[in-house]
Image 1 (cartoon, rainbow, N blue to C red):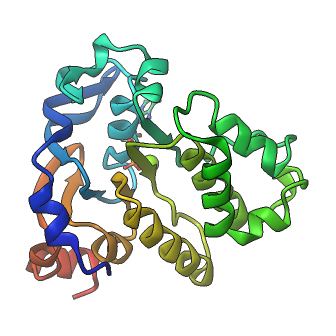
Image 2 (image 1 turned 90 degrees about the horizontal axis):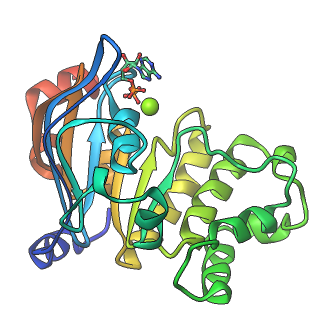
Length: 246
Ligand SMILES: Nc1ncnc2c1ncn2[C@@H]1O[C@H](COP(=O)(O)OP(=O)(O)O)[C@@H](O)[C@H]1O
Ligand SMILES: [Mg+2]
């Protein structure tokens, strides 16, 4: 766990993402109900909850992919009023659960695609990503579909970083990965945090979330049932019994 989480939180007076009374439905299915979430500049916020809780729906809504009721703003502006491409050029970058790689493009071509709307330096971003995941550099001419699940996840994270994020939304980066790969992702995550990127991490892996986040929101059936700083949530009886096996 990084040591400066309290520092990051007091620093973070500027609100980057803010949802209030946010509700989202798919036809008759209500996926989010009156959700309030605030992410301040520099914070690592994790939205945890079981499969089907609404985590991906929240991430998709933040990016302007879904209609909603209530409010969700990125840097003070209502998401519904912004073009998706604009959110991306404003530094809001989404690493999806499905990874959405270009399977028949090489590793490096996938990384190039991530830099499409970036305001940052392509070379610097590429160096950072290759430092973070040397395996991507070793395989830079290999097509994405030939990579293992863990390598594909690294590529998806690397591609997101090529967009020079101000805020990164990362949806279940550890899903389906072997513990040894989760460890690699965990170390890379710490380095991304060091760069000062604001992060919203959705996770079913509560241990991973507690290890990396400053603040936690627990989502169940589309509603936030608990929230607090990570230390507090780690000691919470309900979280321990329900999500950490007692
Ligand atoms: N495209 C969709 N159409 C209808 N229902 C959906 C759709 N996507 C998600 N849902 C439903 O919304 C709820 C929340 O799903 P999701 O946001 O994917 O949860 P999580 O990411 O936490 O697993 C679930 O009940 C799911 O079945
Ligand atoms: Mg999901």
